[in-house]
Image 1 (cartoon, one colour):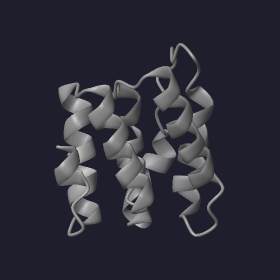
Image 2 (cartoon, one colour):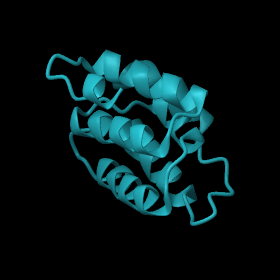
Image 3 (cartoon, helix red, strand yellow):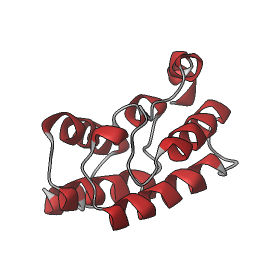
Length: 116
C-alpha cells in the first residue's frame, strides 16, 4: 500500500480516495501515517477528508506529526478559508487521548465544493 501511495503518478483524487478508504477500514498505523503524509504533501486534504482523519489509528508520535501538519494547513494562506478553519478545529481537538469527535463544523462541510 505504501508503494502504491508513493507512486509519482498518484493524483490528488486517488490519494484522497485512498485515505478515505483507510479511515473506514482501520488500516495499520504505518500505512495511515504514510497516507496522511502524501495527502498533505500533495495538498490533497479536503474538509470532507478531515471528518475521517480522527478515525485513523496513529501512534502518539505520528499523531503529533500529523497535528503539526494540520496546524501548518490551518496557516496556509493559499488554502481555502473554510479548509484552514476546519484544519484548525480538528487540530485543536486532537489531544493525547483524542476523546473529542475532531470533525469540521457543519458550515465548513457545506462549503466543501468551494474548496476543490
